Image (cartoon, rainbow, N blue to C red; front, side, top):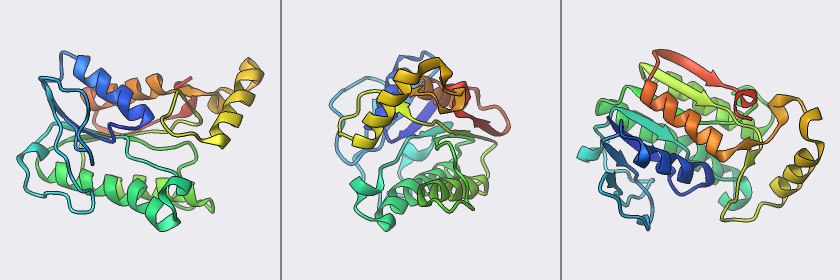
Length: 210
């Protein structure tokens, strides 16, 4: 099968890309990015794109499924508006274009606490994206909702480092839903959801990712 992966350069995204390229069931991976990826692979197609002006008629949109790990932080984005663009508008644009060209399954790396009615901006944006994606029309739609993601990021995030240290120290006494979710586990859940493409809408909660 052919899978489009949006967000291949992030922590979870790098693991997703590796899993997809090593899976014999996947015949081609389409990974649109802002800058060319450094790893050539015979089954990887890496179109360089501007997510503000995606090429709507490109033939590479014709895939079976989509895995989306696009995301940032308000600090890195610079403003709430910029954050919303990356975490809501870009994933929704990718979803609509892929669905228009025939994709039937979509797996999203969302977040624990995603809720369109939340007073917390981050959770509200994640929830609004889930709501918007539910209206696109995919046969199979999966929201993977991790808590604190474990792994080595390219950028330094002080808050995550502190939380990571605390949770590792407390270990088993922390309820499962609040434990660290390894990036590899999240990636595997996303890939399985895209390939299995079970009909309906599914949520993978953080306690299933520890």
